[in-house]
Image (cartoon, rainbow, N blue to C red; front, side, top):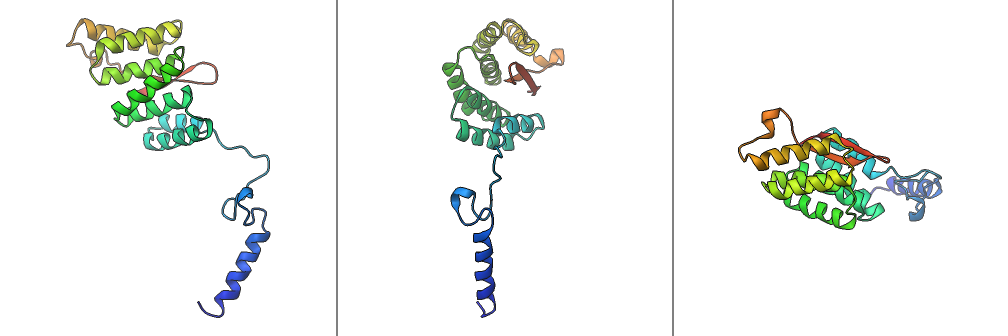
Length: 186
C-alpha cells in the first residue's frame, strides 16, 4: 500500500460505517443495507416462475431458499421434488415427493407429481394408483391430473401404448394461491 491509499481506505470505511447499512451486521452490513418494512420475495413464487421459464436449476435454488426460510413443508418439498424431476434426478424427486405426501396426504399436486416420477421410472402400476389418489384428493377438479390418470391407465392396459400416440405429455401441477395451477408438460 502506498501512503496515499491508506487515508482513502480509512475514509471509505468511515463513510461505510456512517451509511444506513453501516458495518452493523443486523442492519444488513455494508453490502446489503436493508430497507425498513421491505419483505423478502417468496422463493416459491420465484421458483414457480423459473420453472415456467424452463430454468430448472435456478428454480431449484429458489425452492431451496424458500425451504430455508419456511422450513421443509409440503409446498417446499413438492416444489423441490418437481425441480429435481425436471433436472432428471428421479431418485431425489421421488424421495422428496414421498415425504410431501406423507406430510400431507391430501395434497393433490404432490401425489400427481409423484405419479409423473413413477411413470418416468417405468413403475406404471404404482403411478396409476398414485394418479388415482391425486384425482380423488382433488375431487376430480384438475384436467391435468385426470389426463395423467387416463394416460397411466392406458399404458397399464397396453404396455406398448405411448403418450406420444395421443400427442400429449404428463403434466406437473403445483398449488397456487388456493387452487392447483399447472406447469408446463413434462
